[in-house]
Amino acid sequence: MADVPRSNRHLQPVGAETAEADRGDGVTPGESLIGSVELLAGSVRVALVSPAGRIVQRAEQEFPATDDPGVLRAALQDTVEGCLAGSDPCGVGVASAGLVDHTTGVLRRIDDRPGFTGYPIAASLTKLLGCPVFVDHRARLQVLGDRWFGQGAGRASFASVATGDTLGVGLLHEGKVIAPLGGRSGAHITVAVGGRRCSCGNLGCWKTIATSTWLRQEATVRGLGEITGVGDLIAAARQNTGARRLMAEYADNLAVGLSSVQHLLAPGLYIVHGDAAVGGGEFLGRIEERLRAVSDWAEFAERPRVVAADTAADDVALLGGAGLVLSRLSGQ
Ligand SMILES: [Zn+2]
Image (cartoon, rainbow, N blue to C red):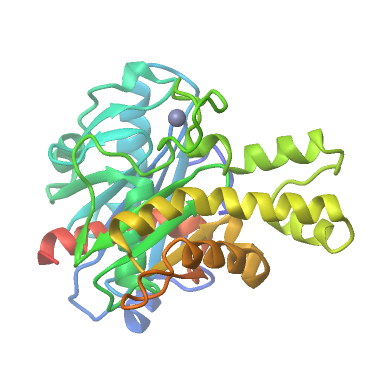
């Protein structure tokens, strides 16, 4: 959200329209709006979302790198109250970083913020707003944004893939989100025995070879200059054999983790968000080829397709939070 100053909590109507105008355009009068929150280790984003997935109002606040749960509470409650108070949302969905207990809405862990462990996100916001509050991991939740508001609409099964500085897969399987307590979103599945050390402490996690961090490091090591993401990589690959090799390798590294998903749950459709989505057919086509190659024996099933998401990258988690509310309240 480049147009919103950092470190300031305030309301931000979408575009030049007002919330009232949106109600005439995207929200039926009397229809309940949905609250959505994205919680990261150092920032909170909040949105008021129409049932059709239109962001009517938003707010954001950054907070200092601290281990004090009081700072988290103040930032969360202040931003949520500022954006949602008076709107009477039918519910609030929180897309949180780290590990959360989605059955209780308690934050279990955010890397480098041990003091936040045990923070009762759902209880604290329910007390503040008096409406139901649901919490889950943000990478898993984006599948619900796609399911309610994006290319996953109408499908019973598909995968939603977060790429870039973060990595994760959200899965809808036969109408239900795969979100077991204690499960994660795929970034830490082991893809290489004895591979690189991961931030989680283990070796060879998918995250160690399939994020923008890996891409930037490899571009430097291979003397390809500054490549910050897939857009740069594709441009370089048009001129340079080494960059073409790196592009193929990066696509293959993403495909390695998704191959496990294909073998276990065969979601058929993979909606890619984040940095890899800008790669279009040149990049995503190779991932699709790999997924088809590892499942070509299943000619009786849907063949894997890999597509770029059509939702705004910044709003993926917020739409996922809104989708969580719709799913929980409707039982779908
Ligand atoms: Zn790991």
